[in-house]
Image (cartoon, rainbow, N blue to C red; front, top):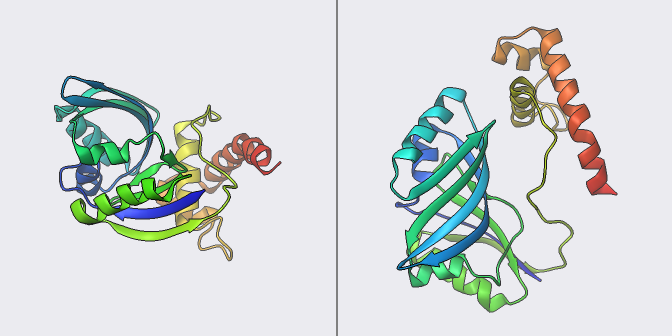
Length: 218
């Protein structure tokens, strides 16, 4: 299997133009697509990360975009139906020979970060060359290897909004790094909650997520 990582910048992209505008991150995963007339309709899901007020502004802007046909949002999880004109280039990105190993990261820096794979190197190169020529793309890595893991959409344990906030901030701040870059006291201060409350929410989130992580290891 050929695996590559790349980044690209699309000035007309639906998502990255506003992830940059509102300093949020969208982890998007394509589910399906179909063609109707001269347009391709793209069904995807994703998780929105960032400041609550910025996420609201992001969603408001996205709903204004005429390319967004349907949008459901609940507890940071989005389900989206979007449309694009059918072009030769878009066919390279929605090629059945391409596997999405991880969600596409629509980052606050305005770039999209892709990690994809294919049995055929030539199929990957079509996408890579298009990204480089048309979307200011940069190939980060490409190698032939056996896949050890792949992201698949699945039912995640339900976390409360505060549990989500605490564990997301803990991860981003380096609480799980070695050595640790932060502690519960600092996380609590950033969220304006007590040490005990922060510790409780973090512990409950970890307890919910840990069984899923152990299953993946086994």
